[in-house]
Amino acid sequence: MKVLDLHCRQGHVFEGWFASEEDFQRQLRDALVQCPLCADSQISKRLSAPRLNLGARQTTAEPAAPVTDGAAASSPAEVSGVNLQAAWLSLARKVLAATEDVGPQFAQEARRIHHGQAEERAIRGQASPDEAMQLLDEGIAVLPLLLPQAAKETLQ
Image (tube, rainbow, N blue to C red; front, side, top):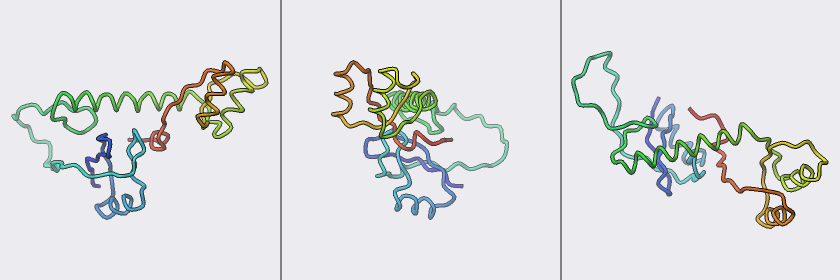
């Protein structure tokens, strides 16, 4: 198993687990590796130190840098950035768990709920900017929220 420190063009840092270097390269080539925050598929490896499992040895070394997502951060700004990414991903997962995906029928279903023609419930889906503006003009509260495909799947 290969654990890689990865980042996207927007600078989001995350970890990826792959069966081998070849598996990583294949998934990268097929655009299967995406940033869990923005869905960018232009991913690069970051420099990372290998982890050697040498058994249960006691160590007297200094404590490591703060760890938040399995990767040691090099600066307070990076720690807060990683914490922000983790908090956003946690929020996105809570939204996914608490809402029903109605897909491209979002605008129609939101109107049906608003007019009492469908059961009131929390929904999510896709709507064009024009459809969202029309819903707002009709007094139907909507909130655009970017949910990358990677956030919709179970991540380790």
